[in-house]
Length: 129
Image (cartoon, rainbow, N blue to C red; front, side, top):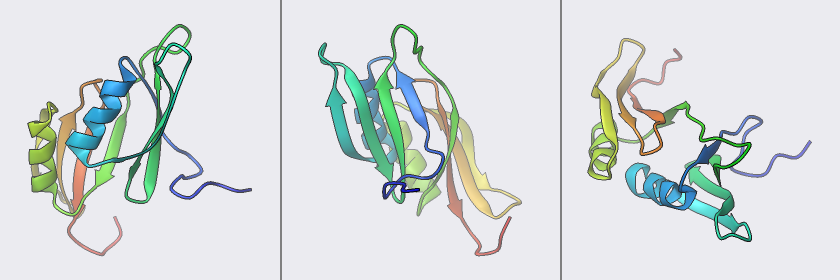
């Protein structure tokens, strides 16, 4: 079995209304890097890809048969406080203040413009959970 670099055996796939705007939002708010964007004949996104470090997600335009999807994502960052500030500066909505957690992460939560929740987390220890 071959899995492309930057993808895992399970890779999130989000259907979003105004997927082009949503992809731009994730790049600005969470520091993702757009790696691909293919368009349908109507100009909407057929398949977009954004990479966060060593992981990627797929994004497509929601539509008939594929309604907007919502989920929750756990995103590891170098600095949770700075990443949360960046997210909030780019129209994400805070759902939880950044704080130290008992399991060794410093974490806060933010909701993106499509309603997905992102747990923005910085690992404070090299110990397992």
